[in-house]
Image 1 (cartoon, rainbow, N blue to C red):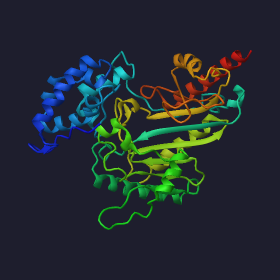
Image 2 (cartoon, rainbow, N blue to C red; image 1 turned 90 degrees about the horizontal axis):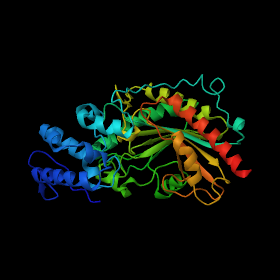
Image 3 (cartoon, rainbow, N blue to C red; image 1 turned 45 degrees about the vertical axis):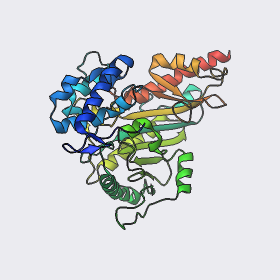
Image 4 (cartoon, helix red, strand yellow; image 1 turned 90 degrees about the vertical axis):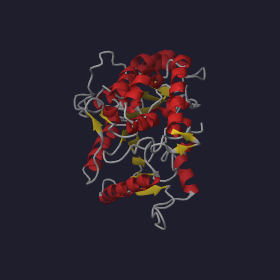
Length: 393
């Protein structure tokens, strides 16, 4: 999808159209999508009256927040925040989208953060060998953004470079810490006129890291991120930090400024969860690093779907009996009511493994505590394994 252009400074013309023309076209398309795609939450909850009640500067920002839902009518959500403060500035719009998406019919819930799993499992230990499983591939990640910067959709090239340079100071602290060590891999061609990037990697190394699921793919190929401006200036300000043992990874410059994750093969779910919690504390204790939060919605993320915990906790589980028809339909039947998503091990829309391996993760992100996410995952694995055994009988 070619972007219709951004609304620029007063009266400026981009893509051959004035701001007024862009706005008129945007509002006409919005009305049409309300009818043609009633499940597009952006179109459903944005009204012409509300949009026109805003001052010109706010209209420009909200236009950019919602452009992806207008250019891609098949969007489920159809909007991204451009600044951490947008969830407050445009609360009459965003609050409706957020509460419908996250299923809050009371319209009153507030997000609570809680990582304390001491009363989950056996004194905080979630051992999958108790469920008849051996070593699993486990991964927990969170999205985070720094308070002092725009979110990726509104960043220009200079700000992307500046953000990366801010993070380099934090990575240096991690590298000096014996528990982390590690390496920074950057895609940024340069840090501005004639300033070399000491961490720049080759195309071959980038491909190797993508294939190993350590680095993210080229975002410019995603029409939703493209319309939102999130993939602009690719590959400036993009890269990752990887700890010495390869288990603690920080992506920078993806859909959120930071995606911080812990991954390992093991039998105790709490190990990745606790290590991620420790890593987040270490990162946020560094000068100049303050994560953006919202009083009602917890940690701020670009996409309203990730607000709150910003967390995705997942495991790869082998269920050959439940998947012997070559599909994950039976697994989805069991996992759906438990609030768990089932997908292929390569991510969304990828096939299940030939040996019946699927990726399982709790769907909820907001109005749920971090400790509850890991507890849901553990009890979901338990139910899935019971069904797998029954299927073999």
